[in-house]
Image (cartoon, rainbow, N blue to C red; front, side, top):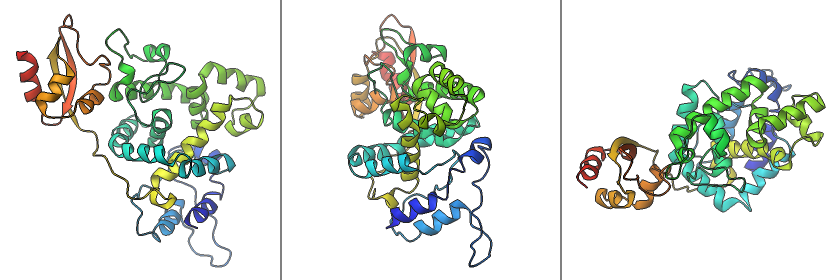
Length: 321
């Protein structure tokens, strides 16, 4: 019932997309006044708060959207999919989001970009640092190697910076800014990120439109790209009020916190993790760019990340071995 009400609310054509695309930093437009009681109209945020207040289980009060939101059949399809068939792994994504989303959104905010672009990472990789696609895209932001190199991510036999959340987020921000400067639409930014800017450029020129939904109707985009933005929008809607969509009792991971320390070549993550008393997996996830699990001996020194408060202990151990 709550999901039906929310769907009805959002369908007031939060395809205010035209307005929000042109005004990405503007507040969500006001709903028209009620014909029955001509009083002050409520914002979308206020409407959603009133709706979610009926549930004693709602865990999220973050009901502001800074990307344009369209609720149509494609978005509805993915909302339903994540609730049913994709429930298990979407739940895992939600739980990981508590760990990684604060950092990603903070970096986007510093760059004056919509913080909801962070949901691209949820769809791209489920926040998994070692995710690898069939197209050889790697890391949380799923960079292919040429694009990664273009935006400053190094790759060699022992290091792959595409896997590093901080470095790949910095690169993604530069890339997203370039895409928005060219296409002027966050939906098209996402589409070009998915299919490549050259392919999107050709389709826009061929069909003479820069409207994402029109390009879908014309079958001008690959099937995966047609579903990409709806997936992001569905993830946004569920993540901002998970209990409203049936995702209750989530095991919230602690937000990502770490310290950076320089250690010499020859440092192995497994032995360092054992010394620090943390799991090997957790230390490897913090240092996913070291995909072999160690720093080669021929490397003078390299920065690694360790749990907050462990920098001195890690430095002492690495430099005596």
